[in-house]
Length: 193
Image (cartoon, rainbow, N blue to C red):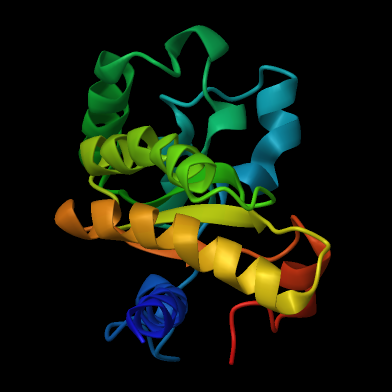
């Protein structure tokens, strides 16, 4: 039952992301736009925009004040530098932009060994810590589930995500799970009973 509650909490977190990330009481339509750093990946790729200028650029160019961040838009030599995150947060604050989400990678839950699943989840603790440094409320992960039967995929996902979600909760961070890293998560039913 604890696992089912955890997965329900994660699912609610994803729903909360959609609602709180887009809902606004101030706009006429009731919604506002948010910007994904990944959607500007080509601009980053060719060096036309850098991470430090991203918050101000998005606000000035599109009038958007809520953004997410993606490691692919960060300088490779700064990804492990806590000062980089503090400076990016400062630049966002100066621009009047909220970094609401940090995009992380795929939690690999293909092992059937609980110790390995725990270790895999713990690799993502750093992403949670970085999200806190950015003032974000969410960390987005993919789940790379085994191609075995659905119950195995579900149990492995619960084992790993429970560890990660417990840690995230201690930091005030909600996990958002994006489908796409495995057949089960693309199907949309992997984490549902």
